[in-house]
Image (cartoon, rainbow, N blue to C red):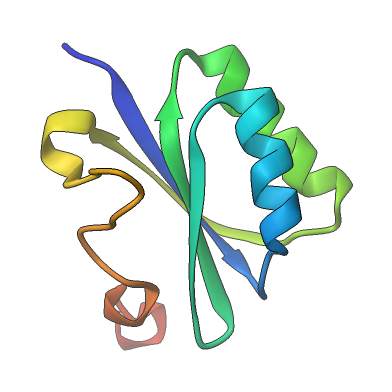
Length: 95
C-alpha cells in the first residue's frame, strides 16, 4: 500500500498560525472549517507521527470527534484541496 492521508475532525476552528506550526512539525497539514467543525488533514508518514499530531491537538484542548485514514490516491488531496467539506460529513445523529 502507498502512503496514507489522515483526516481528523475536531470541534471548533483552528487558527491558521497553529496549522502552519503543525505543518512544520508533522508534515503538510491543512485545515478546512465548516460550521462548528474543522477538518485537519495531511499525509502522515507513520503511526508515531499520527500519535504525535493527536497528542498535540489534545494538549491544545481540541476535541477530536473523528479520524479517518484514506490512501493518498483516493483522498483527492491536491495542494491542500479536499474531496469533501466538513458540511458534507455524515450526520452521526442520523445513524
